Image 1 (cartoon, protein in one colour):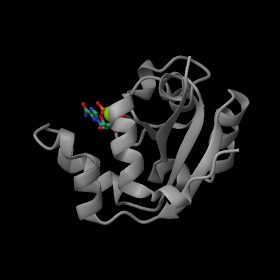
Image 2 (cartoon, rainbow, N blue to C red; image 1 turned 90 degrees about the horizontal axis):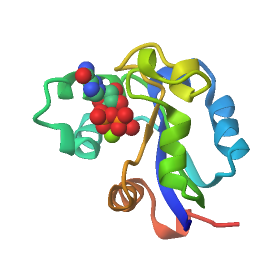
Image 3 (cartoon, rainbow, N blue to C red; image 1 turned 135 degrees about the vertical axis):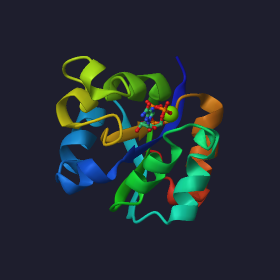
Image 4 (cartoon, rainbow, N blue to C red; image 1 turned 180 degrees about the vertical axis):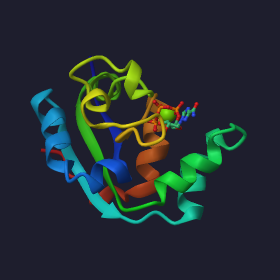
Length: 141
Ligand code: RTP
Ligand code: MG
């Protein structure tokens, strides 16, 4: 397994619930490290650009409205097999279908307000990390 980086977003619902720290602990306990992070309020243009791959989907409008409904916490996680490991820790997109003990099972309310985003491939991880961070804003251990 290779050391990888992946983009994680703690979405507005989880930020509003004040569980940023609890979610980061899940990542750290699984062997992932935060190598860059910041809190921001996405603009509509940023949210539309970030989720452009979904722009033809019926849920696109709701997804963008939700992602700009409050601040988000964006972070880059680094570690062995980080992309798949993050997806495993997140759980299924719909929290009702997420395995017990996953972040979405424990912190999410609905398929829209589902607590976290995680990159789903190495190529998308690179694109998504570059969307939010300059290289000198990321620091490996
Ligand atoms: P994410 O991109 O946020 O990490 O989530 P994901 O890979 O598990 O799911 P994806 O298919 O990429 O969808 C992105 C987000 O759109 C919302 N969604 N709503 N109503 C629906 O059928 C539906 N499907 C997806 C979710 O909030 C999902 O996280
Ligand atoms: Mg996705």
